[in-house]
Image (cartoon, rainbow, N blue to C red; front, side, top):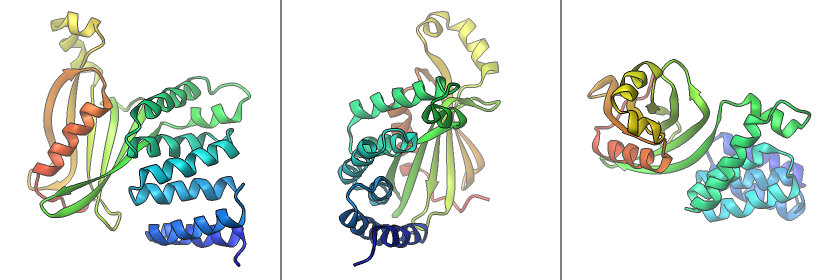
Length: 241
């Protein structure tokens, strides 16, 4: 029987080759050999996520967290597992924990310091079918809006082989926001902002598409629903350059 270490190594090779089902079997073998192996449980959660088996991913990620509560990367896998499993309450509680770690990451706690160095985390992986083609969407949440255009969320659209074909950003830049807030002081005081959904990549509409402008609060689930609708309606994209 292979050792836990050799099974993990085989699983990582399969995972990197895009063979998620094979990788999951290897990681499960490693767990059988060493149930207290936190890394094997974490990798099994990752493989399950790629197979869209959210509940299975939750089980392995929660076990990894139990075995190694000091590794913040376990939480970044667990939050995606909660999202994939539809466990929104647990997802949002863990998002808040990750944000707190990021904000507090200046002390001696290595867990918090690692979180402070990150710009954000993978919040969810989900499939979308458009014009007969299946895509995987990786949704990234940033701890703080990124760049000059202040990107709150980024949705990376990949083909089945993993190639990036499209990117949709949720933006709210301060330049446009100032003039909007002056004209809509009540909404601004209530925490609303003006947002844009901007697409980047090759499509029938061009390399950059301004999909829509709207106002509201930075609600991930609302943005996700908009992105799904866009992807279901737009023509297939060519691989991004």
